[in-house]
Image (cartoon, rainbow, N blue to C red):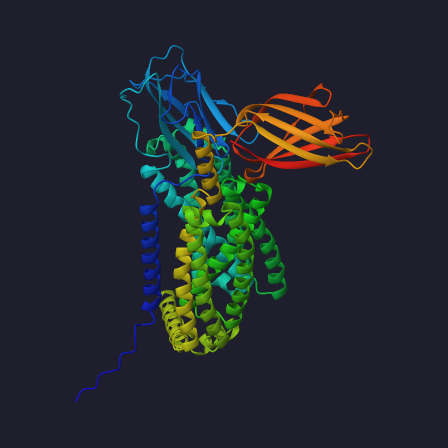
Length: 640
């Protein structure tokens, strides 16, 4: 009767390969779905209005066409084109004029005189302040609508094959940054012995190579990505020069220079540092590498902060350093997680102390992520309606849910870490060397040919590695930790993909404000002059009275302002000084100062008061009745 050996599960040697294949398949699936469903990247800036409006029919030909945007943009010679019904240029083909004032971003192009009746097409393309290309088109008619032969490309700016490759490079850049920074931090903080481990060296070097290659691809494709959409223009020297003059181009070049410094850091970390035997020398070098590496890592993170969402919008001076801290925390957590996964599967020497140190690093990273994430969410979303009703808000909800799942899986990893022992840790260098010397065959001391000696050394190394793997894989605590960390890494891949998508999606706050601005621009609020009455008391003698304000027509654009001041007896009252300021707090516009001129006793006026945008404006009035008696009062008014 023949006996069959019990099935012991997958071979220990095949497990790392299977884990790597699983992660590679998951990465491909996630990125494939995201890139297939995302389409061209939404941008920070959005068109909020135009003159003439979309679909409008005007009696006479306008002298120019103007476009208003929610945020600052960069324009070129052909950023705004006006085409007549036959497809010929109706504008003067000059660079758009910057007509921005106050908080309104507006550009215009002049039209030829004597334009005939018919339907005209306005096509525009620009670059948002956070580096993403935006484009669109609309029509208006002179006299009456007509047929038009204008056929515009259906491809949006940043779309097409160039857009797909550029987006892939963006995902790869974030992934490379995480592996480079997180892997280096893991070696310096958690496991210094990992500096001499070949799998750890490969992980960090591959992260550097990925980030460098992705940055070069983005730099070359930047011109066609924001312009023609043709791969051939990637090597247009004039286009490349124009890219270098922009904020995103400068950020990419700065990143390449910093990656040169990072290459030197890697050489020292896995060269000089790994060979140091003296503990004090290694400690001193650890401090120097930590400081230098931290500066380089922060600089690389700043290349994203200075060119994307953090660099524009409200509180940019605060948002950029917060974004740098957020990116470094992501890299320390997710990159450290990838390093731990590689160490557990590919190196038998990592001990429980290193795993526990990473647990502390991960906890600190989560605290930083929570603090910076709350601020970023408020800044980019701003309201509950934007959280649930915009694509950015929905992606943010998914990101928070994934972080919750990741923390839940990390809790199980922490339990396994608590049970971890060092029984599977390899012997020290001295003991290992002595053991190898004691177990060396007798022929090692004889005159053996160099080829035979090398073969014997390889055999001993394979035998030693096999024994280590067998001992390591037989440790249930270590096996449980490996499975748990693998699950964390799988969730982290999806989390990193969603985070990258957020950087290319229009923030919810901007999307809502742009929609509100577009509604106001296309359908001005009905109503009439604004009439306000505000009592005041400066606290001095004859310091009581009433301020009456008329703002006509009480809409966006130019307005006439009249202010009357009545004393406590109801008679006109003169004061030494009167000032006004208008603020639209919901859009962070203002205060816009207004200094009216005295027209008669108790009567002041100002003409041409510009209201850049409809909304609930706060009107501050400062009244001074003597050298020391002054008061500022305010009241809100709806201006359409």
